[in-house]
Amino acid sequence: MNKIALLKGGNGSEKDISLMTAEACKKAFKELGFKFVEIDIKNEFIQNLILEDIDTCFNALHGSLGENGSIPGLLNCLKIPYTHSGVQASCISINKSLTKYILSKQGIKFPKGLDLNIDKHIAPINYKGNYVVKPNYEGSSIGIQIVSKDSKDKVLSSLWKDTNSIIAEEYIEGKELTVGVLNGKSLCVTEIIAEDHKFYDYNSKYKKNGSKHILPASIPESIKKLAFEWSEKSFKFLNCRGIIRADFRYNEKNNDLFMLEINTHPGMTQTSLIPEQAEFCGITFNDLIKIILEGAKCD
Image (tube, rainbow, N blue to C red):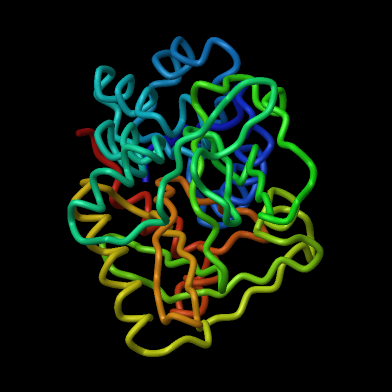
């Protein structure tokens, strides 16, 4: 393996998650004997990429530039092979509304979208059930609010910096599920139970013991097969690469599965789902890193 640039950090809302992912990858690089350099994109990283004579980039970024296609686009121009998805898959998947629009045309079911009245407060138009409000472009469950139909508290629009980029959907009661897809093949289905929170929020994802992971999930075989089918179809149709994660809600009462979103840069921290699923399938963390690196290329 030639010289690797471990891209991390930045100035976005998910920089801390990126640093945690990079730390885990750094440990693996050292154990594997790889030659590498860490590059935080909050600094003059383009110059560093050129001066360091990099052969391959491992994209350990989360959110903003790392996931919206900007970094893959830059690396395409510099002709430096990189891990994870390219420009097309990245810029589509970071946009939840666009992902939903495109994949629903492929027969994948999503929660019903809601029109919003946005003023000092936010409220759905002509809808009386439980609902979810979330940023269209953020990851790591940042900025998500679940609102009960019985709640007397109004949702303040000031909770979000940009109200033009928030979306709302009906809230699906039931189990939270996720599927990792490695090089186009599903790993397994994990059920996520947030210990102290109503849903799998930021603290549940990254705080130690913040959530309980059940794998494989206790769900009907038909739902497992459907989750695998939709996850792999999304990977292929969006032209994803390497590793992705597809998130779902499963309503047991109606035996109904709904996709929520596609994450082209799933976390690789100590509490993350993908390393756990890989291990369940007999793939060690170090081997997972090697597999992802072997797929590095430009668009």
